[in-house]
Amino acid sequence: MRLIARILKSNGTDGEVLMSFLGMDPEEINRKEPVFVEFDGLPVPFFFESFTRRGNNRALVHLTGVRNLADADELAGRDVFLEASDEEDEEDIIGWTVLDDNGTVVGKVRDYEDIPGNLCIWVERDCSTSLEMTNKEVLLPLHDDLILEVNPDTQTIMLEIPDGLL
Image (cartoon, rainbow, N blue to C red; front, top):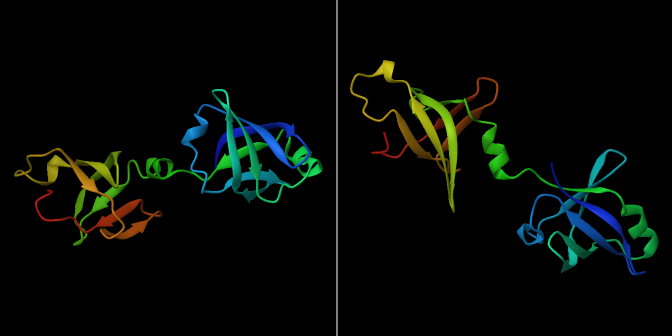
């Protein structure tokens, strides 16, 4: 979960709240995705029913299920979270070993590149295994159709690597 905002106070009597966004533009939020507010240590999902921007980092919002002043007051002062983004998930695989579909080591994940619609990883190749190797780094697509196996225990990713990329 990633902290994105704090609910400052209720606004009016119909459940609307004033939300202050932390370190991001409110327009960056995908309002079709849920946001989460913690209650008793558990994240509770809410969806935006309305969203009216107020200044640079604030918005008046209506969240699902918040229908009156008492509900809105219960949210006041609470933090608002989003699920971790794909970018944050990909950072977790930096340093993992990449294998081809034969189980041969290709190299280690050095970084990722979020090309719109095509997430890729930079793989640093081990030059000691091949005298013919010309590219010390290679950019590989990290598409669901190409991922054959992910093993968090051994920190390996097995990919079906399209011809010509290596």
